[in-house]
Length: 161
Image 1: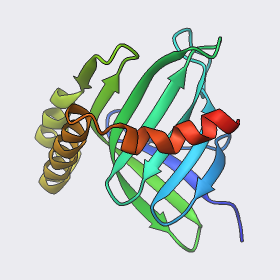
Image 2: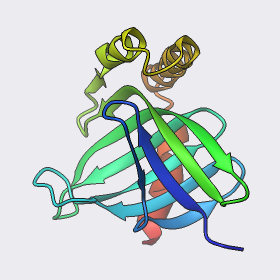
Image 3: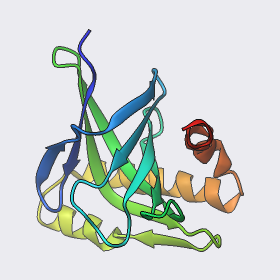
Image 4: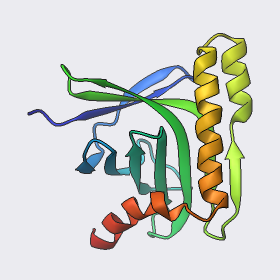
């Protein structure tokens, strides 16, 4: 069977990119874990790991600087579309994001983009409802000190890599 192809689809800006250099470390019906380097050189971060939670609509990523120090955890609210014939997964970014810094500070990002996308009819109202619901559940996990139920999937690979 051909290797799974993962695409990152954005609503703002409108783009869909094959993540051709991502290395799949683990894949099953519930999660896909990848390791990657930035698509384009950046000063702020260099590489990382991502875990796609297929049942909950989260993509949790651990971002590292070039010196391997942790920059932050980045959580995307996403939706998944699997094409069995192409063995491809399209990961659609539903715009709302959460960043968790090493000191524990939590920041919610891009909520205003949800309203822009809805106003410009770039997405269906149902997608906005889904994004807000998933964001609420993710924040509940974080505030209840249960983020490790997500991050541990990546950390086990970081320790062995």
